[in-house]
Length: 298
Image (cartoon, rainbow, N blue to C red; front, side, top):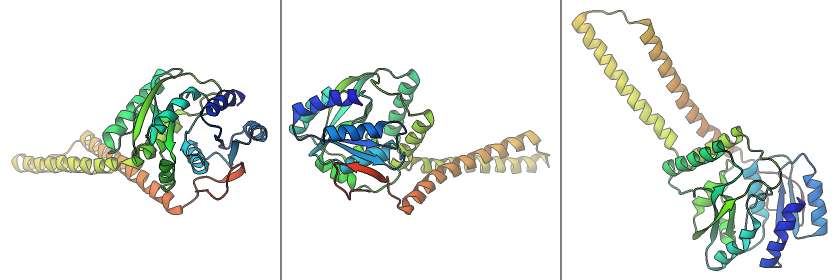
């Protein structure tokens, strides 16, 4: 925590004296909350937003965006993989007229081949199945104008994929490039299961292609089935009654059963998201805040 503020505060001070840091504590189980209280008491421009439990990265990021009051807002992870030294250049691009300034990674140091490979595959898949362009090798680290933040606050969905929402709102955008360093503090908490859930949220939130795929698959299988049935009838007419084999029957039944379960699973993913949206539960619950205006919960 100290390393983060020691690097971040001088950079912000060199840009403007009217900076603020909104720290979102997403249900941490260590001493993060007490340290943030101490830092806020020492520097009131460091502000605290503590959630009642762990609501997940996307909800915590949304909370920070809802409470940030600046003319420009930069989401920032505390692990210092995204260098604070880029902030002055981002601000310069914003002052030049861009509403969004993306920090795009040239290299991803400290990440294994599996994570790099799955990230590459995910971005390519999203680019091919959705109508929006999600920039490759670009995380949440970006500068967004106040106009962009106000539009994001209007988006009500509960199952959120923030990179997709950032891309969906549009606005004039430019890139700056950097080499991502290994984590300076902490250890990664994003397990493969969490990353898989995030990827599913991205795909199912921004495209209905899986539903259309089930339709196309059904048409293909039905066509093959009708063709096979016609062939059996024709063969029976020509050669008489033929006793079907057990192996072929079992293979057909298992294949069709598997396809039906896959299709039901895809439909269930969409129905589950509709179910969560209709409950209208809040995205997050604030347990404690310091230095922030009240009444912005969503």
